[in-house]
Structure formats: C-alpha cells, structure tokens
Image (cartoon, rainbow, N blue to C red; front, side, top):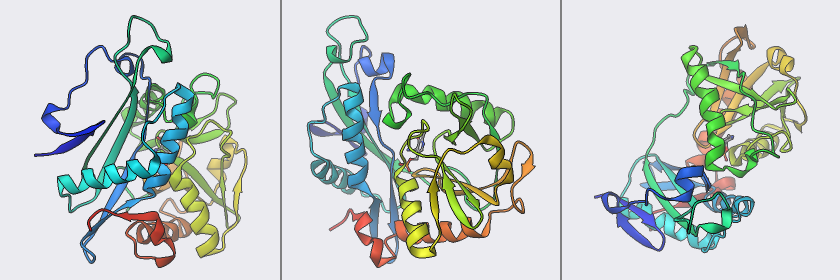
Length: 305
Ligand code: PMP
C-alpha cells in the first residue's frame, strides 16, 4: 500500500481525495515544489536533495497567494522523511508537496475565501529529460508569464499552463524542449528548468528579475561551478541571438538535472554534442546529489535511520 500525506495525517493513496469544489482545482490557486530523492546503493540510503530549501521556498512563495504554511520547513522535512520511509522506496524518487486553496465558502476567486490545505506525495522517477545526449530545442512562441501577470518565481499551479503550452507545442513540432523568452524578448528559461550559457569559458544565466523560477539547481550549479571548477558565473540579461552563438548551453532543474543542448532553432551549438563544461558539471552534480562529495553532504537529507 502506498501512503500520502494529507495534513494533518498520513493516509493510504486510494483514500486521499480532494473535493471537486476545491478552489485550487478551479483556478490553479496553489503553490508546489518538485523535489528529488536519490537512491545510493553503497549506503543503502535515499538522499533527498536540498529538502529544507524546497520547503523554505514553498513557504515564501505561499505569501504571493496569501497562503499560510502551518508547519515550519523543519517540520515539513520530518514529515517528508517519514512519508518516504512509510513507502519504503529503494530507488530514485520525486516528492511533490502542494499547498492549495481548499473548499471555498461561495463562488469567487478571492484568495481568502478558501482555507489553506496541504498535501504531499511521492513516486519513483527516473529521467525527466535525457542527460546522455544533446537535446534539440526551439525558442517558444509562447512568452514566459510576466511578474505582474502571474509571478513565475512563485511556482504557482495556474502558471504552469504557460509551461504546458510551450512544452506541448515544442514536442508536437519534434523538439525535446523549448526556451522561453520574456515578454520583452529576452531569454528566460526552459518550460520547467533554468538555462545556462557557456561562453568565453564562463557561465552566463538570466537574473532572477527575468521572469524565471529561482531554481535551487540553478543556485547549486552556480556554487559548484565556481567552487569546484573555478568558473566565472554571471547573471545578466541574455538576448535570443546569444543562444545561437554560445559555446555550450544546458538546462538545469530538479527534474531536468543537468541536460546539455546541441541545437537551438536548427542551429548547432558548439559541436552539437554535450559540451565539455556541461559534462563536467553533470558529473559533479550527480556526485553531489548522491551524497558522494563530503563538502556538499549537508545538502543531502538521508531518509532511513
Ligand atoms: N523553472 C521552472 C519553470 C520550473 O518549473 C523548475 C522546476 N522546479 C525550474 C525552473 C528548476 O527549479 P529547481 O532547480 O528548483 O527544480
């Protein structure tokens, strides 16, 4: 039997039901997180990556929706560990916590007319994007949602319509993924991942003010790139044409991990294969998330005692 958490209880998956009148279901009024746990055979352990940071982000993002998280990030960490233990996973997993607006008192979109509810579930997950070959991507004709429409940094359920439109059209046109621009026409991010350019031997990525989700993997990459590889990391506005001229390009995200890009809008990037710096960062990232580098061990929360 699989278990999920529906605050304040752990319940069997087949008994976990949400009322059809739920505000969050009608309007996408919810904030969520996507978290990965990695199975390490050697230590017989699941390590959940940067777990507390995810719950801190969820708690902060809730403020946009006037959503009050009733449990502290530390409390959520313990609930999450317990949930994974109850399910007994011995493989790579994904954890999805959702803070949502519940049953409203009457019709309306007001954020304060429905109570704040919380649930969390987990399931096995392998690759989300290919990381063993270079991806073919396009620039999407769908712009990223601007901050004064639906804040992209909020990881708000309803905002993922924007990602769904962009990704679906990219896949239907034969691409693996897409790169989204801001409504000003600058480079923002992938449909569900952040983007880095390798140019002049350093990393460049759009700043947090460019309608991106402020990724935890993005921050991880910035840190390990400068500390472990001595690379310069610059956050600045990126024009579309810079994509075509970059030495390397890669996406990063909890789901995406570190995924190299070989082609954008049918223009080859570098050699068309995963670039050498991207490869180094991929290798480092996979070591870090599996708890194999002592300096970053504090980012990996073990599940089993
Ligand atoms: N951008 C978007 C739109 C996303 O949905 C995600 C996945 N959460 C990311 C970037 C990457 O963020 P993170 O590294 O925190 O998973």
